[in-house]
Length: 300
Image (cartoon, rainbow, N blue to C red; front, top):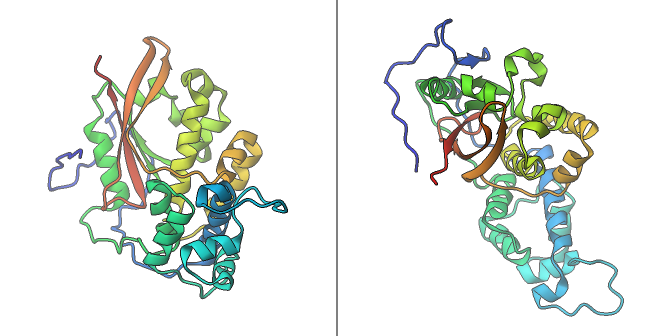
């Protein structure tokens, strides 16, 4: 686990600081538990359907039969294997209000649908059973993220902070040389997801562009389950689908991933091909409002 020490007092960013940051509210934010709202209920329904379609009957120990039209499991088969009524599960997949699965039922569904660890946590998050109640902090999540970037202002590798919508909050000078000069972009395009799919420069800087973007899309979909208001998210997704058909395909696949450490290759304009390890800091004080991405060299 990566631990970074911060001084007890805030680290104000002076105007002369090379760290670039976007103005945000500094008021402390408290995240409270809540009931599943309609966007999350509908996303839960879509996710269950997508995972059900992925499981073959023979993988679940069921005969395929000759008259089966579906490649995946039927709703009644999922219900039977999970130990719930077919009607109840149908209502759950339809996103009907008042259908609230317990942790045990969610774990049973994860087993039947052969979900991996990341997908299982995402399922719980969508069902609002694994939501953090939040903590009070002396520094707001956004300000804490800005401070962490400030600590990395002299690091020769990228350090940037973003919020739950992938809007960039702050970045160090090295981020500009490895990615792009986000300060030169319009405010609504200072967004990592937009840059990855909307800027031709992204494919030039990232030789493994397709794999990198698929990874970010899966991470973003996982994180989106913690966004209280899905209105802006839905507008973003609709806009990005128009920008990139590939984004539309990857988003609609419902693949999800946690913030695992991974490597990323860059075509640096001066250094050539450089491979760095991404280290994502997503502490309880910042989640789900923001996160920080550090890049570290990979030892030979």
